[in-house]
Image 1 (cartoon, rainbow, N blue to C red):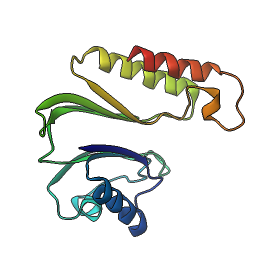
Image 2 (cartoon, rainbow, N blue to C red; image 1 turned 60 degrees about the vertical axis):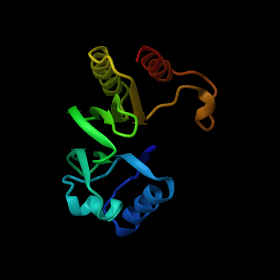
Image 3 (cartoon, one colour; image 1 turned 180 degrees about the vertical axis):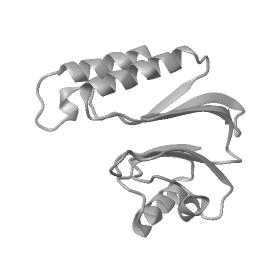
Image 4 (cartoon, rainbow, N blue to C red; image 1 turned 180 degrees about the horizontal axis):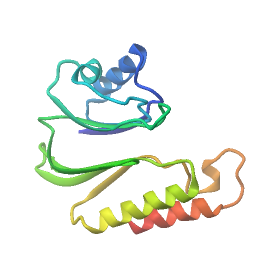
Length: 172
């Protein structure tokens, strides 16, 4: 079973949808999170262009004013049975059962803001979310920060923002 996340930087073009479809087929993806979808609304037709004519479901965060952002979490219905979910501006959380193993878990996809203080708000929201869950958690997405200077070209020192992400990841 493959779960994937991709900062797609816009899912509007046919070429992007074909790229997603190719990934889904080649890697046998059953759950995929698409970050920065740049879609205000997502239709079944949009997702069928990625999944083919599969029986799918999804959760979506629309873009912000100006067309930036957007999140999509989508899955094959026979692979993941959604039990509950929460959606905020910068994340989607889906708790459910992975059908293949009857494994209950929480999948959370994040598209963190560029602003450091807004990111801290997101980290705190996710800390609170995690504190209310007793099931294993998969956290994926675009955090708009790195944990170590080596992960960023030209960076040599640990910034406060890097430390905040590292502490957040340790907490959850």
